[in-house]
Image (tube, rainbow, N blue to C red; front, side):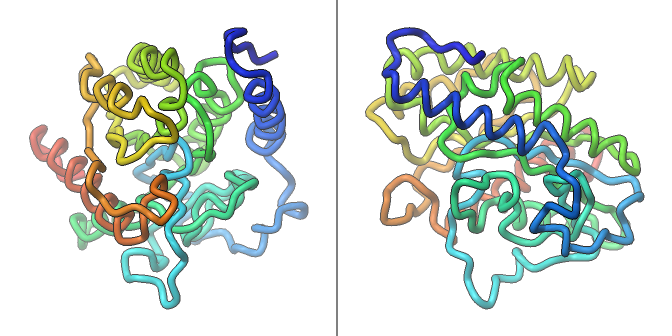
Amino acid sequence: MIMKPARQPLRLLLAAVAAAAMLSFLLLVAPPDALSPFSLFPSSPYSHRPKLLFLLAGQSNMAGRGDLLHPLPAPYLPHPRLLRLSASRRWVAAAPPLHADIDTHKTCGLGPAMPFAHRLLAAADGEGVVLGLVPCAVGGTRIWMWARGQPLYEAAVARTRAAVADGGGTLAAVLWFQGESDTIELDDAQSYGGKMERLVADLRADLELPNLLVIQVGLASGEGNYTDIVREAQKNINLPNVLLVDAMGLPLRDDQLHLSTEAQLRLGSMLAEAYLEFNSSRGSML
C-alpha cells in the first residue's frame, strides 16, 4: 500500500493510489504484443545490437507535451540507429510521442529526448553507435512516487534491466525532469533535495552502476507557489556525477506549466551538450 503523510489532502492520496495501481499494471507487467496498440511498430534490425541506453524519467515535461507538428522538425524524425523500448519491452523505431504507451492517461507530444538523441548521433557520425531510449516518465507524479518500492521506481528499474539484457548495452545516463508537482505543498518542496539524493543513490545501487550519470532539468515552471524552493534543492544536490541543465527562461505553453515545442527542441540540445561535455572531460566522445 502506498503511504503518504496524513496531512496530504485525501483526494490527492486517492488519486496517487489509483495512478500507482494502474502504473503497476501498465509498467511492471510486460503486456502481450497482441494486446498492445503499439504492436504495429516492427522490431528494429538493430534490436539485438549493443546500445547506448538512456533512461527517461520524471513527469509530463519529460514525457512531452509539445505540439506534434506536421511535418515534424528534423530532430524528431526516426533514425535507423535510434530505438525506443516499448511498453511491451520490445525495441522499436523511436518516433514521437515516445511516451504514448507509458504515460497513457494523458495526450503525449514532443519532449526533449528525440533532439537529445539526434545530437548524440551527429556527434558520433561514422561510428555506427546505436542509441536506445527507455521511456518511464508519467505526468503529474511527485518525487515520493519515485521512491524505491513504489511502482514508478520499480518499473523504471525493471525496464532498464530489460533494456540492458535484450541485446546488451550500457546505461549511459538518466535524464530526469520532475518536480513541478512538488511545488504545491511546502513540505514536499522542502524535502525534495533529500528525496532526490535518495533516488539517485537507490538507482545506482539497484542498477549496479555506482557512478551512473544523472542529468536533471532545473524547473522552468511549477504547479504551486514553491518552485524556487525546489529549484534551489536541485541546484544543491550533493552527489558526484549529477548535472543540472536549467530550463528556466525557456518558452512555455499557454498553461504556463509545460514547455513549448520550441523549448523542448532547445532543451534536448542543452541536455546533449551537457552529456557530451561531461564525457569529453573524461576523454570520451559518448
